[in-house]
Image 1 (cartoon, rainbow, N blue to C red):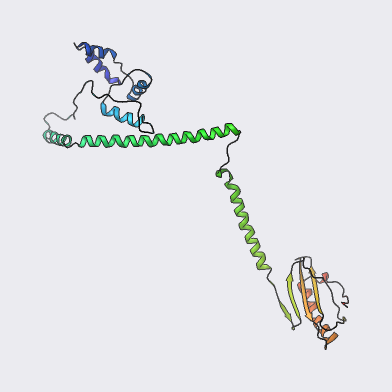
Image 2 (image 1 turned 45 degrees about the vertical axis):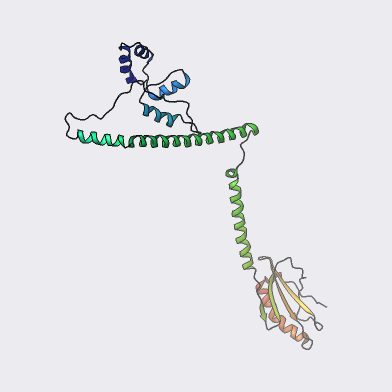
Length: 278
């Protein structure tokens, strides 16, 4: 029983009843209610205190996840005692306060409030026990995995960094590829209707050929002029058709316009000497 229980022990020990005297000899004042309840779990003993207070502490501190409790409260009371509120002597509001207390008791509000409080306390304790049990189970599973393999089990939390880096790389590559497409658009220039310049990568399947002004070409032959630039790694291709009637004069006139333009797009030192196509 609590520390203030020594008054109860003295009362029972001084009684003329052999039963009360035996009960007083078994009473030992303790530090607190929690210590008494814990002692009741490991020893053949009981704890004496206010009924509602004991019920509340048992439901709050000793309720299992399934709602059961290892402790219980006796059906009867060892020493039923009335209780009241201390008020000044001859207080004018005593009669009114007595009437309100009696109305509350007769309406069953006190019992209803007590039952609701006990039920809410029990449910709260059950939830707390379930959460504790789930946390313990998770900790045991992790400990078991570490003990079996020697290393902790990889989860999404350990590998999410790699997925983030992969996503960033895909986004970066998409931006680079889009910029290359925009920069690599075809550029078509019409030089007197005879030359067409376009950009193409170095790995083109065409053959680089240089043409001189004195080249003679038969009818219907298509000639390609390529200029390489070591700086930007692009080739400039000029294509024109030969008119049989104009022959060398037409080719010479068009080359005089085409060669400076090709040298401006590429580097002039990258163009070699002219060779005869035929």
